[in-house]
Length: 381
Image (tube, rainbow, N blue to C red; front, top):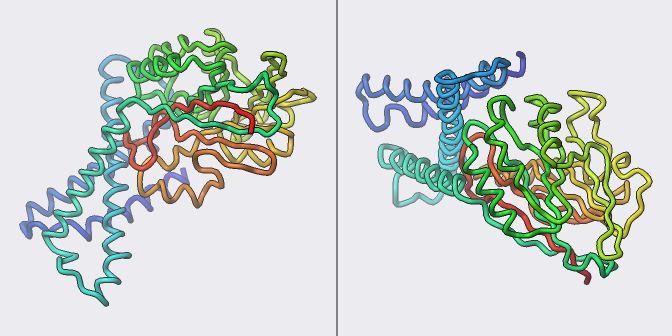
């Protein structure tokens, strides 16, 4: 509860700042000012509803109650996007442009009705573009991973990676089916799902999950848990996926013979899993065990597992979690938070690839970090 109070206090301060910057600028009418504050208050209330009510619900909603809940979630997540862009452009004006303007005055006013209209156009223009990009099909990103001593049998081996799908109130069955169709068309040798499949009660989302059961590749589909699985109940989801042929790798591995080469595919539980269940504590060394192979791949939701993975002896780690920040300004912030925030990187002798996310979390917005299904091809060089 303390965390929620701190969160709401910070949220209130941010809204007070935005209100101070924008309310009453376009019109001095008292009624207009009240309407503007009420509109800001509505978006504040929708965001506050998430931690106060939605994330604490344990009962299964049905019918009209479920529709109402999903409608409120849409409103809350859109409000988060609006808040982010309002903060971005207000702070850009106050912190960046205003000091410059003091020494080198611009030809246009930084404050007043014209500036306010410009901010609102930028906010809702960015939001609209971001929504279109988020709700559209994820791109396929082709990545070649070069190993100097790759076994000839693994030359050209292809892995399709899906990550951070976040099936929930705003990502439903049609989007999931689209992801599956795109992935299957790649005809990969192996499919890796690096966590955060759902964001909600499995009892409600089970039907939206069903297209994933049609994923096809030569060696199968392998899955590791993300942090969001632990928010909603990890065991029922893992069991539901396993029942349909998706292979969970919970600190364990599988070995395959690929054209005379031995491939080890291991997976760990999420880096935070031990906080929810000590049995699920993430352990790359345990996942690999004593397995020997020509190439050892680790699936780990969070890229921060990389140091332990490299020490354990893995050659390649596939991760997600960061979403690449998902949209500006968070695409800039994420680079300060994570050593590996997106794309291909190197730690010691190990490659690490961080998928930017196939779905999205929170605001249905993608701007500066496009959603992706990754097709990784192993090659010698």
